[in-house]
Length: 187
Image 1 (cartoon, rainbow, N blue to C red):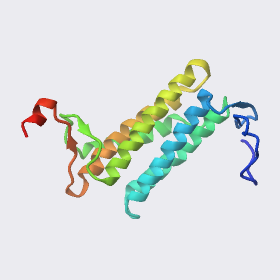
Image 2 (image 1 turned 180 degrees about the horizontal axis):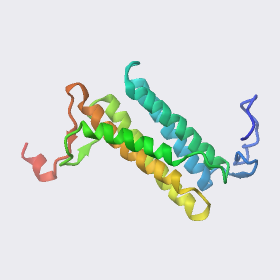
Image 3 (image 1 turned 135 degrees about the vertical axis):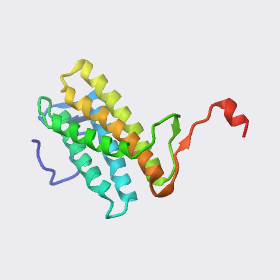
Image 4 (image 1 turned 90 degrees about the vertical axis):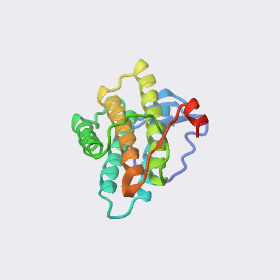
C-alpha cells in the first residue's frame, strides 16, 4: 500500500494534483481528496479530544482505536478497491455508544454544543464527522465506495454526540439545553 516517504516534500503536488495510494493522480479538490481531508481533520480532532482526557481515562484507549480506524478509512479511500473498514468496526462503535448512552438520561430537549472543554471538542469532532459523511456521500455518487465506510462515519457521529453528552455530565457537569426564543425572553 503506497510508498513510505523518506522526504516530506516531493514537489509533485505543486500543480494542484496529488497521488492516490494506487499511484494515480487526481486534482487536490477531487471529491475523494475532500473526503480523505475531512476524515484526516476528524482524526486530528479526536486526537485533541484525547489530550483533554486524563491519562487513566478508559475512553482514551477507545478513542485511540477510533483514530486507527479513521486512518484505515482514509487509506481505503486513497486506494480504490481496497477494503479496511469491516462490520466489526461498526459493531465496536455501537457497543461503546450503547454503553455510554445507558448512563445518560433520555434526551427530551435539543442541546447546545458545550458543557465543558472535552464535551465541546467532542461536539466539534461530531460536526466534522457529519461533514466527512456528507463528502463520502458525494464521492459515492460517482465512485465505488463500500457501504461500510458510510455506515462507520454515520455511527461514529452518533457516538460522538452521545460521548459529548456523557463528557458534559461527567463529574457533576451539565449539558446546555437549547431554549426556544420565547423561553429565552422569559429569563
